[in-house]
Image 1 (tube, rainbow, N blue to C red):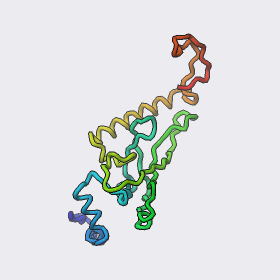
Image 2: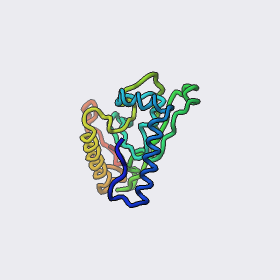
Image 3: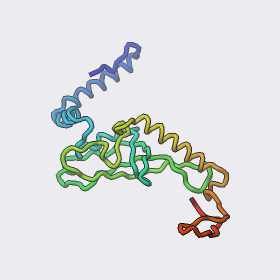
Image 4: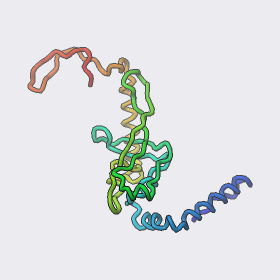
Length: 194
């Protein structure tokens, strides 16, 4: 295990880091946690249902295709609930956690809200590939996590620009001829939303 202590740490910081290091060593050698550490070491890209909660500590960026089957980036804001032995005995059908993203309220130009989403992962037996979960940490994205993150941030900037355009309260007004599915021309009202 790598030392947390640095030469330039003051006495108080050094004492805190020594305590943390002792706590980490106790956790890593705990008999109760040996199966967890063994399974994560043997198959780092898979997870058992009972250990799902360990994937989502506060600050974790997670991806999901929650809307329109398009990738979106979310952030876990607080500690998730562990899955206890009692929970496992009852075989819970789903484990839930919450993560947030920014979204436009649809009414006010440039008004973005922090919106919480509740994610549920259905119970499964054995180990499951983390990237096969309905929502999972960005770092487990198979192709290139950094490239996906960059793309999603650029898409978010485009979305923000469109929502901030003059008159974005009602999206875009259109008052002219339009093509219908059967190539018919129809008059479209002023409140048509895209």
